[in-house]
Amino acid sequence: MTYKIMIVDDQFVSREMFKLYINQCPDYEVTYCVDTAMFADTYVLNSKLDLVIMDILMQDGSNGLDAAEKIKKLKPELKIIAVTSMPEVSWMDRARKIGIESFWYKEASEETILEIIERTLKGESIYPMETPEVKLGMAKSTELTPREIQVLRLLTTGVGNDKISESLGISLNTVKTHIKHLLDKTGFSSRTQLAIQARITGFVIEDD
Image 1 (cartoon, rainbow, N blue to C red):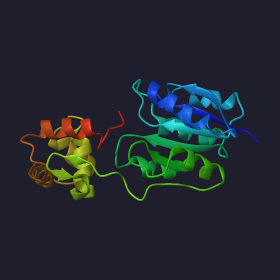
Image 2: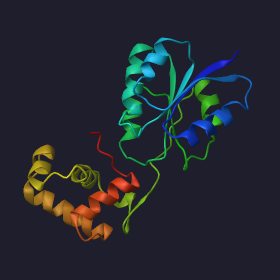
Image 3: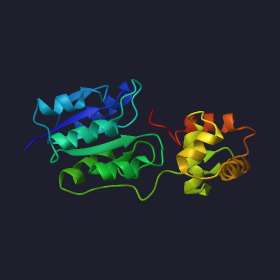
């Protein structure tokens, strides 16, 4: 039996690397290779596939997790591996809720993509134990509390303290305290610098 695989990734080099690895195995065939998640569900409807390798963050604004959610509603039996190089802390949880079988970090995972493909097709669900640790200024990502991460995510959208307070249901003073702790831990001199670096590192990415 030959397993048919679709690759969804907006980076040309990543797509070619996936194809190179997959073509090493005579049991796998890359049926489609597309650079956007926007129409991934259409490809799924119009062809017989066994597995989708789905990058999460696309330059055209499409989101692999949104596409995976649509696919799972259309064909819940179709297996999906979410892949990313960004350490956004919420993505693994959302992938699990959607029903995505496996999750693979491009640079940080010990297993190769071929190992993940083989085990996923055999019925396993493979997820990393934790999100890769990244540095945010002087702080390690693991040193931030869940509430500080929530505040940080809203900071990256450019909203003021009042909006953060309203969104999280906490007082203005508590918001100010969290921001002060974030600045103290990371060593950044301003909330703007903190927000920019949080997005550059990919530690938090607001889904606009």
